[in-house]
Length: 584
Image (cartoon, rainbow, N blue to C red):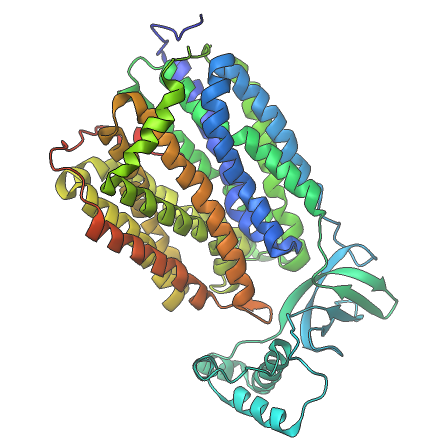
């Protein structure tokens, strides 16, 4: 029976290859994951379809738990399994790059127009292309059964009251009930446009007036010399191939996260000391993965030549000018191209990794998961299990909303959204360095509470103070959210659970962290996006209060009900980054 090498190589060449492996492994994930939550909804899939596509990663997590630990680790050399997985996963995610319909103004193509007025139907809008062709966009905004083309005098009076009221009064007094989503939207739109159009530039600044016109991306139905007609709700890619390719990628990718850890542990002489510096290259890969999109998402058509303005002004203009609408969507799909190329590179590197034979099977493996699950009978373990589920869902909601929030509400240029979100991973590296000290000083419960409250604080800023500087800076809290809760849970399980079931116990918690928690969050966030959509915009203030409230509930549960045994020793953690679970 094959066994692991007894004296694994530890020379610098091996460590360099392991660092490159970790860098590429997490680079692939970081290349598409964050921007994917902005790009995939832009393809106009139904809410449940978005949830299924995003849930493919969570299905992959379940496969990783059962397939990689019970089959792959026992049957294949790790480096061979890694290479084959990344060839298949790379082909799958590369296929997603080609599924979006092309950009253009011919029938069956996708384009965008700035909507400057109401169309003939309640949900339709009109605008004008640069070539002066008029555009009618069906379903430019949501409408409902209460929208009517003709209104009674009483309804007209109620509509006037609605328009004159503040947003808070409209919500509190429910002034829009029975008037229709589209009817109330267009009434407010017309008022805001008249005020904006009549004001001078200085008045717009002084009164903080915003241009109510909005960009609508649509599939062209009819193309005439003087007019285009399109549908803003028509899907821009076929759902079934998209879902199946995403599922195929995730089923082969997610297990490789643990496989790369296995390769590193098996080929380092002193994993406790050496794994941390290798593992950190994965976080660096996640951060670096956003760099190509600083340039891919630039609207180069609006950037002057260097000879006209000089290098400094040219660079400033380029980095601050991002694509919009259909052009932005077409550029965002490059997340899959970048991830696919990185997958092929890692597949090519895999044969050069140290040989890591299959692990011998243990007769107790089949019972370990059951033994681990039985420990949920202890109240403090059950509480931690529930809180982990809640916090995993809250953590996922950050990725679900933040890219579109920063772009559309905070007005961060699209090409800078990924680097802004990566601030959290930079903070994570620094926070992990002090986690051991914090755990010794504050203990399990207080450390975890701070981690959960980090989520609550971040969403509170997003909801109630979405100023650019605050919305960007608060992402530093990601390090606290990640290290003080997720990594601490991982360490706690390693300390508390019996040695023969620790691996299975970690797997159970990873099912929550990577599987069930995020999957439920995708479903809930999808519904919130429907409930709190007003015209073409989302009410992020209301949406983020759900995540904030859930985090507060989790913190309260920990504070009141989480009481681990006092006899447990405090952990000695010299390199805490090696204990971190595989979450972003």
